[in-house]
Image (cartoon, rainbow, N blue to C red; front, top):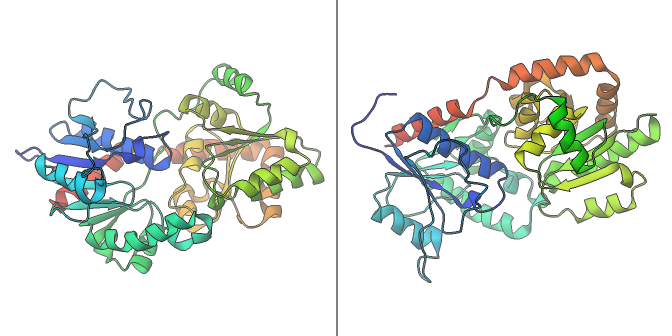
Length: 380
């Protein structure tokens, strides 16, 4: 990418870094850090009126001189962040471009904007979200998509959905693939076993990673797990690792009544080091989501060598190819059979593990950051 004399000042939405990092937080952080690393001449300001989570913005690398996590002080006026506080900051500090990494951009202020749309679940799977969020998304997202100078999406399938549901022209949308983070790699058993001991996990175990919310379909996975106990001699543990999102009461009610309750472990939020240990030691990562923008956990699991079973929905297939074993997310029996087959078949596990590690290496956050800067340059 040719170099310009004048320094670019990029503003990035930092709100996804004000709590435990989940998908959007990781995306925001990796893009910001990738841009700052690859392009030391550009200034990257991550902006949030809410305090940052110290762990979320720990960069682990030599402090990048050009990456700043800024929390501008707000008053009763500027605390209206999107309409007043942020546009005011952008103007005052000469930000050239703002990148909304979480479906939101300032709607006025005259600066070019890039908007990332991770998925359209609040549009297409409204029943899996809290109604308040659905109403807000349906009201705001079409406007945001129209006003954004350019849009970034993780997969071709989301691009098609954006075109269809938000009526956006193709040339405005760029597909930039997500990647597994660098902290996910094959590690020695000894290190991993200490984590299993601490979390009271027994092998063999089936792993699910992600927020517990309806479209992730965890309840169907639990039912498939019960079927394995009913119909086979296998006695694995099911480990559900991730924070509780919303509308998950029926899952917990079901688990309370379940005959296999004592073989089910719901860990809550798990940090990266622990997660790497789980990816490295599980017999199968099972990710039966009903809908995804991209589906990152299967890719992260592959980077650690885990055999993966996941849904045959278009965006996930686009992300994991034929490297994962694909099942129908609505079919309890199909999921149960797939898991049973993989647990019993060491050869196939080995094959999918090796192929998965190779596949995961095709993706990198550095490439994603470089492609993102290319979008910025076009916009400017």
